[in-house]
Image 1 (tube, rainbow, N blue to C red):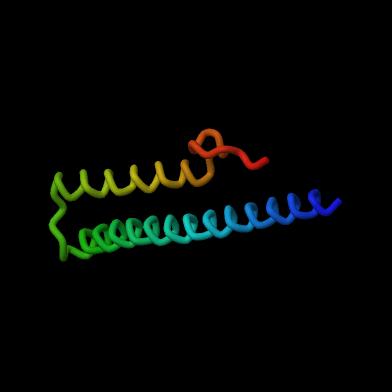
Image 2: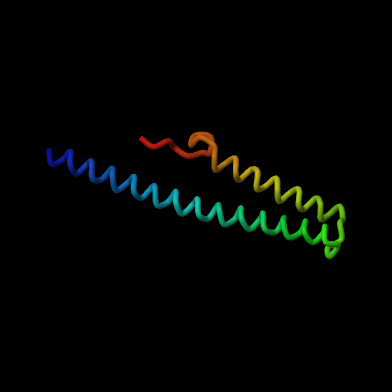
Length: 89
């Protein structure tokens, strides 16, 4: 029984560590996505206000930023095996 309790405690510790890692990764991803969207939004607002010239390179950069955000969002919402992680268990 004592061995089973130790194994259970070890599993709980492992799951708590995984959750801390997942939480940290999610916080980092939210920060990175938020930064990218803020840059895109500021650029678009500047263009609409006439402060930033609308040029093909700027529009292409905005498209790249939004594509990267889209990819990141997909990775965050993908099933664990799709995101390259091993499912818990």
